[in-house]
Every structure is written in structure tokens, then in C-alpha cells.
Length: 270
Image (tube, rainbow, N blue to C red):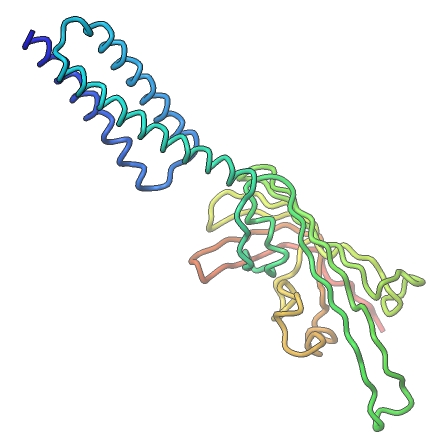
């Protein structure tokens, strides 16, 4: 009788010891798949312990049986806690946390939204409206208001290695007669990103040239004043984009780079 009690206690101790490592490892976040594997392993061991208890119910002493039953209940509670954590993970996958508003790979925060999603479609954008009050020294002009632009970012993350990102811009709330001053619709950029290594990746399509201070990050909160700087509008085209292919990457958390081969500038002879 004592020998059977000793074997049962030893078996339970061994099982609990084998469960100690995966259970304690939950101090650090795990994926849902890893946690589910631990739950299945624990449930299997619980079933084995119950079967062992049932098989030896008539041969073990009451204290040993009660101790084994207590150990099984403790293990069941741990499994329940783990199951609740898995359910939380499932909920987070369905209702993700709010993405942080930050730039990525030299683009503005709104244009960078697609880089923060796990998979699938991403929609972002911004609007810019101005009101101009004419003072006496500005002639006979009238006060005016203008919806300068409405921008839509549409991206799609196919996998961890392939991503599409684009920008569509509507200016002055109408297409008018096609003149920029009267309104137009433009594809500011549309490109595929191929991620190879954090330090060196490929981008191909219509890209924003890394020229000047705001050509890539041209969202309103990132330049001083109501309008884009004069240099960026009259000397350097803004927004300047071309068909091309190139490399981009992140060398350090604070240092990124972009380099393209693109179409040449149109030359006009006078």
C-alpha cells in the first residue's frame, strides 16, 4: 500500500515539475498558437492524472487520493487561466489596438499607416483647407476659402514581404477644366515594396523622389505656415514623383535612406 502511494505521489510530482517550465514561461507574451499548444499538453496530462487516480482509487489511501485530487484541480485552474489568455489574444486579433501615428521609411505618418497593419487593406488620408483674408495693401482681391486638397492613402499588405502603397490627391474640390489651379486628380505615388532585410529593400512603381525637405513628408503638420515653403513649390516640384525602382531601408531606429533610378527630367530648348 505504501509503495503504491509513493509511486502515485512521485508520478504527480513528476507531472507538475514537467508543467512548471511552460507555465512559468507565460510571464512573457506568447503567440496564440504557442499558448494553445501548452493548453493541449496540460489537458492531456490532466486526463492522464485523472485516469491514474481512477485506476488506483481502490488501492490508495484517502490522504494520497485527496492530495492527488487537489493537484489536479490546481492544474485545471492554471489551464483555465491560460485559456482566458488565448481568448484575449483572439479578441485582440479581431479588435486590434490603435496604431501609433508615426512615420516609416521617410514617408509621412498618414502615408505610413499600411506599414503598421498585420495583413490586408489599410486606408488613411488627410485634408487641407485654407482661408485667405485680403488686406487693403493687396489691391482689389476678395477674401476666399479653398479646399486645397483631399488626399486618400490606400495600401494593401499581401504578406510580411510584399506591400502596396498609394496616394490619390483631389485638388480644389473639382477637376475643372484640367488646369491645376481649377482642380485636378492625381496619383501622387503608387508602388510595390519588397521586404528583404530591414537595411535593404526594393521599391518599384511611381515613387516620391527623396529631394528637398517635404517632397516625401508633405503632410500639413510637417511644414511651417499655411502653405508649403516657396522653395519647395517653385524651385523643387512638390509633389515630385517619377516612375522608377530603387532601394530603401533602416540602418538605425533614427536613420533611414532611399535611393532610386527614375525617369530623367524633361528638357526644353529655348
